[in-house]
Length: 173
Ligand code: RP5
Image (cartoon, rainbow, N blue to C red; front, top):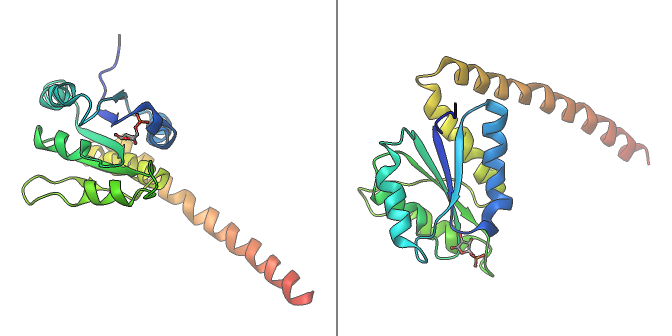
């Protein structure tokens, strides 16, 4: 039996996949069922609206939206649903993602889009943010998030030890 997705990862084009796969990797690691699709605010407005209108009744709990350029996709989806919409601006033009960042983040009052950083860090954080939303009602996901944060303690301490060695080498040169 197929498990229904809890989260949708939507992107404006398959050219956004290299960035948005970061979110998919996180959901795989956390064993959170998700779906991934392409829909465009400008090229396929009707497909985008249909998806957003049906998202809640399909059992989705949040929607992650990655788009580049004049990135209106997250805003259009947010306009059609009260599910939380998490936007990921993508660097797809000569403006290096600043166009997508401003298009995604500057929503008018009343229709929120939780906007993450430009690029891969934003895609990863979008998935973590969605997991945090699910964790409010799911103790398993809550535990996975705590373990995920716990790993930083070890990795940062290791980085600090490596830094001490580099510093000693540098000062003795
Ligand atoms: C945006 O335009 C997409 O999200 C993508 O980042 C960018 C370029 O799309 P393609 O021309 O590669 O399809 O709508």
